[in-house]
Length: 178
Image (cartoon, rainbow, N blue to C red):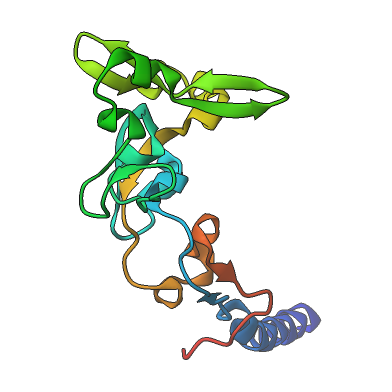
């Protein structure tokens, strides 16, 4: 009988602690802030969790050529609607080969290369993440994800908050409405 009474008390105690713990388990973290990055800032594993972004075959591109990226008039040619690598604006071999990026200490890196197809960015010739990042001064970015993030940070839960795009996962849990 004492064993049954003990089991009954234990069941009631576990029931109460489960109920008391339920509100703690239902708390969630929120996602706040504004997007400051683009889909190209994400790797393939993060890409699919952000609406508006899509994974692509990994490639090294000049940042100006990345779909959905911001067209910086200081480093890109064209406009916001038709943005491209500065190489595309070079019409002859001497001007193509003279476009360089400074590495500091009087060192520089070629941004473009002259080919039978005209002046092209050096980025697509880089076939690995490491090689591409080594050409960062030439504007190269390793792209596994493209597009423009949709909604805003608050549309994401704290668990799916795209912090690498500038959103911030709150540090304190916010009670859910459940």
